[in-house]
Image (cartoon, rainbow, N blue to C red; front, top):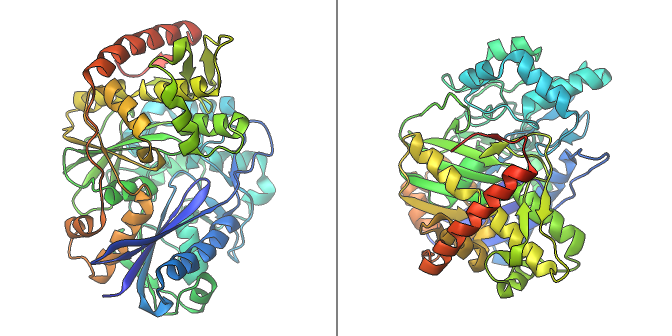
Amino acid sequence: MTYLIGADVGSSALKAALVHPEQGVVAISEQTYPMHRPHPDWAENDADDWYRALARAIPEVLSSAGVSAREVSALCLVGQRDIAVLLDEAGRVLAPVIHWTDRRDPEETSALYDGLGREALIERSGTLPIPGLVLANLTWTRRHQPEVWHRVRHALQPKDYLAYRLTGDVGTDPTGPTRSVLNDWRTGTWSPELCAAAGIPREILPDVRYAPWEPRGELGGTAHEIGLLPGTVLVAGGGDDPAAALGSGVIDPGDVSIGTGSSMSWRAVDSRPRFDPTGIVGLMPHVVPDRYLHEMVAVGSGTTLRWLRSTFGGALDYAELIAGAREIARGSDGLLCFPYVEGATVPVQDDQVRAAYHGISGHHRLPHFVRATLEGIAYQYPALLDVLRERGLRVDTMTISDGEARSSEWNQIKADVLDQPLVPALRVEAPSIGAAILAGLGTGAFSSARQGVDQVVEVAPRVEPGVQGTDRYRELRRQWEEVRADVFPRFRLLVS
């Protein structure tokens, strides 16, 4: 059997996984790139960074595993769904890619959503209209960069842009339109009505042409640029969050995937779509046949920890940073963190609020701030679990994926706060592993998603909540919520 490669285009890094259908994951590569911030509250990606990262990552996984390009049968790309690369008629990138964590002109974004009608947007798209999504970013470009806008011929998600670079094909899968607020969840494609109301030409958005597990073509001469050979199959792929769910084994009703990258995402699987008229639980097709994902996204969580590390962490990596908090008692000696560096979405909402540390005392050191940040993110978990159950979704197995799954300290905090057992994915590169499973489905290496999961996905032992930790955190979370109500009186509580 030949090898499969899955690659995930993330906010700050592209990760590639080399997978053998019988041996599982044999090599991983992570290639980082910067998030550009030309002005306060702006966040932009350079689309060329993604292509350069892919061209470094694939040769690296092949070299580290001692595998030749001729042994690779398929490549599958997955990536962020919330952003769009703007291309002209010749396929040239017209402008930096406005990232979904960008918070430029929040009042303008709020006025846009109010004018279109938030309830109408939710009813059609199944998505809570928040800043940073495709509709808001395209509208900003149209209003503020008319010289760019009149040249736009394509607006492609990152993985579809890379597919275009590699094959010239313009298209997407049913997960592509989700979280754009320009989609129709019932039809699984773009909404002509929303596009017309917002003044966004439908023709610049890629047609939904492939299921995530279907081939979209073969690589031609450009294959050499990324270390592969012409004839390698390119499988369509999908969004990073559904790919992360697949790559952590979350494919059956009752399975829930939790991941904290830049934001915190909860993804609950069901066999049918459950539309939430409040928009708190977003709806999208899974990258697995006959499955749907119900998603909540809390922005600012992972980026708060990233800000703390980049500002005060010095040369410490995340593992070292979190390990230092091990010595700090539950409650961080009275220090509280409200992790809202990019606003708040769920379980409370305020697009313009920003993060805060409360209760700083002279004895507090960096480990206190780290633990307070981990706890502040975890304190949001119980309300999100409640809303899934209130919407009638089963919650059986809760799996932790992404980089946070590496931290036994943080996993224990979350299990204690939730009073629920958690299953950490042993390999944290879940989206790229999910992409590799899709590559296997597209080429027949796997007969089903279940077979792919059984062959490839590895999980660590379950993390059980501790009685003392659960009791202590129940009280600490109550105090945290009381202070939050005082510090952020404008917060709109979305869930009980």
